[in-house]
Image 1 (cartoon, rainbow, N blue to C red):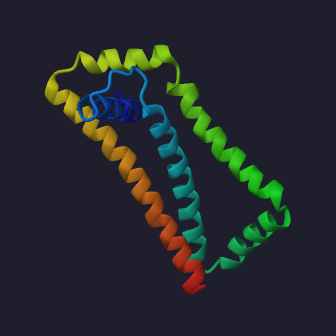
Image 2: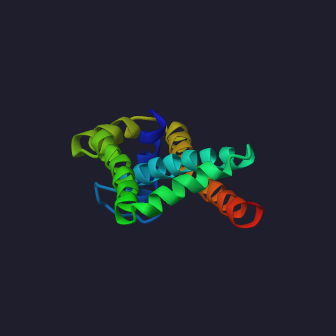
Image 3: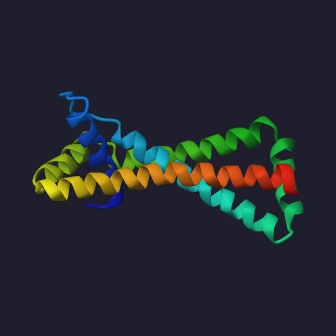
Length: 147
């Protein structure tokens, strides 16, 4: 199983064991989409940090000024791009047949393998969120206090 299927299995395991629900569909696909969006934003943040650390802060401010110049269109363009990234996860893992196939393969694993797959998916999701918040904090710190 790849890492994205592991995220779906992690959520499936949490729903089945901790909440004891009998629902077939879980929020695993939303977790994959959120992780993808966080990873894209983290990469953009790392690009901004690189520009700031190499004393090219004027390029960062030019990009921000360009987005501000276009006002609604610039912000809407960013939101549409992030929505496309989010919906790509639905295209890849959102179908019911795909979900059922992932869960069937997950159910055939032994208990230790199930825990390992679920743990790997949980780590990927939570570390994606954590990394995004760390990068966002560094960007805010650099822009607000250093440059």
